[in-house]
Amino acid sequence: MSAGHGPRPGLVEVVAVWLLFGVVALAMWVTYARLPPETSYNVSGEGFAAGAGRVLVFANYPVALVAVAFLAILAERLGGRLALVAAVGAALSAVVVWPGVVEQSDLDAKPVNAIPAVGVLIALVLTGVALARGGLGASRPFGGGWDAARAVLAVLLVLGSLPWLVAELGFYVGRLPGLGSLFMSDEILPEPGHPDLRAVHLGHHHGLDGTLLALTALALSRVVRDVRTVPLRLALGFYVALMLVYGLANALQDFWLEQLVKRGTTSLEIPTLTVPKASWAWAAILAAALLIHFAARSVGRVGRPSQEGVP
Image (cartoon, rainbow, N blue to C red; front, side, top):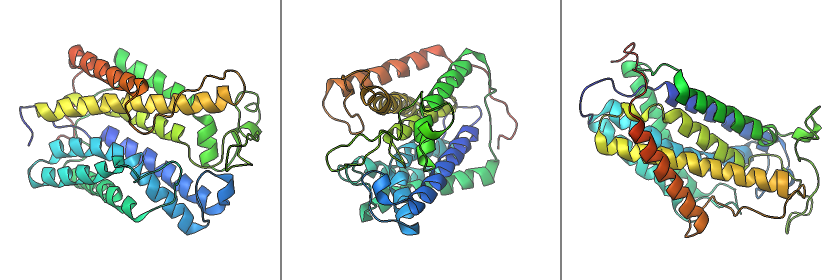
């Protein structure tokens, strides 16, 4: 499938993101297995099965969205019949965008969640096949202004995500020394149907999903230019740009609500942005993604990939 000449995409960034999502999934499983459902948000059940169910939903959103990008890279890397397998995996993963597959109002696992999860499994298996055939492959040396900008944005994202990262482990960040005055966390702020809801509930947050998507986009943006098949590179480039803007928007929306609106700093709320719809906010997301995509295309290749490990 690969066109042109030169090294095929490396897998350093792909493997790093897989490891990141694996760590989050493990923490989620443990937390939802050990905590009662009322301490979290829109889940029922408890114990090992409840934790597994929440991880299955996580494998749909946001992991299936990331798997689509992985499978594009793997299709280029593997080629041939395995590229067709990657296309099938991408189609299965994309089922997550169908209305009702994942609903914020009901985060319990459903049979339909198995479909995108199979797409994710295909991406994971093909990653293993690519590693077995050619190792990590070419890697773009880290350095320069763009990587510095990526690193700064990644650090800011992680710092802003501290309340969600601690909640993922089943604790309130405000109870950690020195952080209580910085972040809202265990203050009781009831919502309809949730009389004991805390400012930052325990368990998983869509703001963390946004952070993970943005971090993934920052990592994969280093790989896009190594995809030699032009239509695939263009599609992947826009998809990664959209993933970045969408992830940042959701992280900002959740942080704004929990840390500013709930604190009383402002009454202005950012609308929920998890589900695409005809709105000015989503028009802005698409416009920003297009601008980033075209700007990235105009920059040209930065650095030269190392040939070590290229099959």
